[in-house]
Image (cartoon, rainbow, N blue to C red; front, top):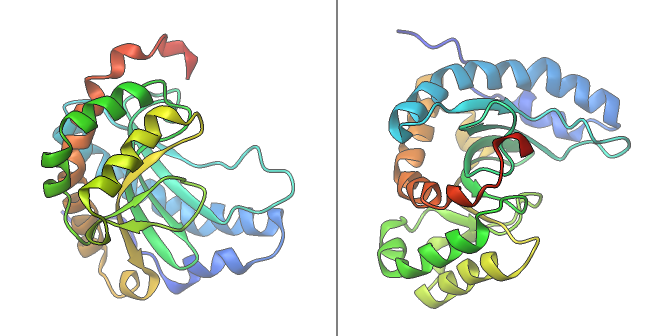
Length: 221
């Protein structure tokens, strides 16, 4: 069945060169967010089937911003209708230069210590499992990444330990796709690429799920 999703174009990436909060947000809402909704209609069922959980899409609203326009935007998928930031989740989003496709445990998550410990227990398998062209990030608010192929196991272990010891720490894993590559992909090719990335990341989600008992209340999202 043909997808309704229209792949990202040069115009979508150019949104981030628009000056001013209101003009940039208007462009994000008009150009990118409808594509996120179409993409979510394709990706959410795939993630729900792969995880065994109902994965709900959350399109970033950037509602707390009052002055500075967003430098990136995204749709996140998590097993909760109220929100995603405290939960292990998946993300697809854009910076001006690239698309990111992540599995994420960010600073608001209550499972960081437990998740860090359990990843460390499986560090050998984790290091071998992640492909060299994948990347890691320790801060979702910055575009910089660390390529897995450039890391040794000890460096990965230190990154994981940091997640459990520093309050504002985060851990994201996935791929970044350069703008010039993305705009050449068909809608179907882009969706398949995202799904392939998420399939590789699925063991990380499953480890995170074993830590979810540490979440105090489902109403705290």
